[in-house]
Image (tube, rainbow, N blue to C red):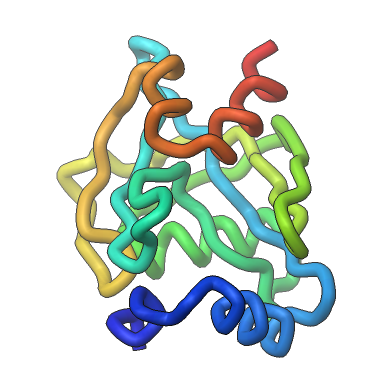
Length: 145
C-alpha cells in the first residue's frame, strides 16, 4: 500500500484522505527533546516531499483521546513508548489540523523498531528541522517561542 501511495499524484492522495478522514482530519505530532535540546525526527518511507518530520500520525475513531492517538502512532510506527504532555502548538495545513504535543520518550532510541512507515529516527538541532520540513518548522516556531 505504501508503495502505491508514494506514486499517487497529490490530488488523488487528497481525495483519499478526505474520504477516509472527512473534511477536516486531526493530525498529532510529538515534540520530543533530548538533554541537549535536540528534537527527535523520523524518516517517513511514504513521503517524497518531506521525508524527515516530527513523529506522529492521524487521530482515528478508535482513539479515546488525542494523547492516546499519539501514543498509539509512535508505538505502531517506531516501537517506542512515550508519555504525552500538554499541547505545544496547533497549525492548519490543507484539510488537516495538526496538534503538536510535548512528549517524553520513555525508551532509549535503542528500542526503535523500523516499520513500513518509519525507517529511521535521529536527533536534529531545532534550527535544522526547518530544513527538513517547512510545515514542522512552523509548528516548532510556535512551540519554541
